[in-house]
Image 1: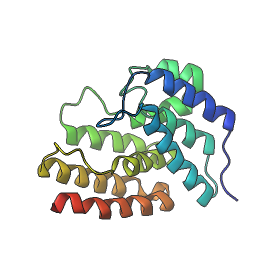
Image 2: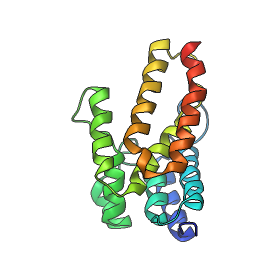
Image 3: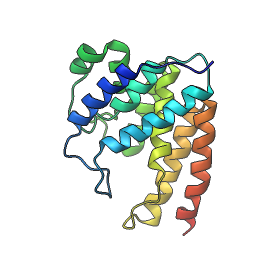
Image 4: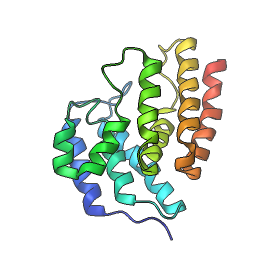
Length: 183
């Protein structure tokens, strides 16, 4: 039986994310940023339909809220008050630390914290990278595209046990993205 999730919690989380990201755009586009989080949630919802035994609300809410601390300046305490400790902890684990300067170390730290969370948080990390593995902006150098691909592989390795459905989707996106590295 597919994992269940609440439409009411989805709507509340989407409204919160929409307000938090108000005025932000998906990088390299004119789309409102909330489109990105809705796409991440869509990937998670597809996985919830394919896999049993998951806490759907935790996965969907964290998918919709995953960038509100890192990119919209919301605080952990506010998330905890509105959505509870498990959602706030999940979003915090998905947030890269500003205290770490190295991009590589930031990702490693976030992935380590994601692995300490319920598997639904790893699903969000996989789904986020699936959505982000679109054709890269034209101004990205070959080196930047290559590093982005390496990071996707790192995410896959760290979070693949969270969801075989999403891990397989990410592998497919990684394979497709290789064309931009070889170009």
